[in-house]
Amino acid sequence: MFFPAEGYKWNDLKRYNADLRQRQNDLDWDGAKSALASGYADLIAFITSKSEAELYGGPMKGANNKWTPGRWAEAAGPSHFRSAAKFVRAEIRSREL
Image (cartoon, rainbow, N blue to C red; front, side):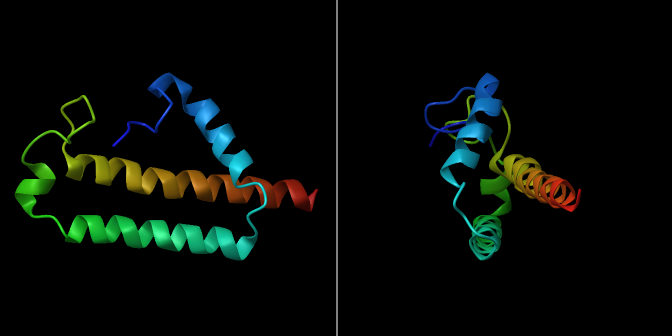
């Protein structure tokens, strides 16, 4: 497991996001919706498959900090959806001008 992603450090997030957008540049609207739905399903499956102790009993393996898996899920899951929504709204606004 890599945090934040393989080949990136926390201070590389802008580069990571730019690289991700480039890799997904040809993704159409249906593909984007499908990817978000799949990510949501994965997040829910992760949360529901873990016990309270697994979610909050200790630091997440590989994260190199004190955050528990549950805390990561609480913070990172919604954050990705907020970022996606912000990006989509900005794209829609830019095309309406």
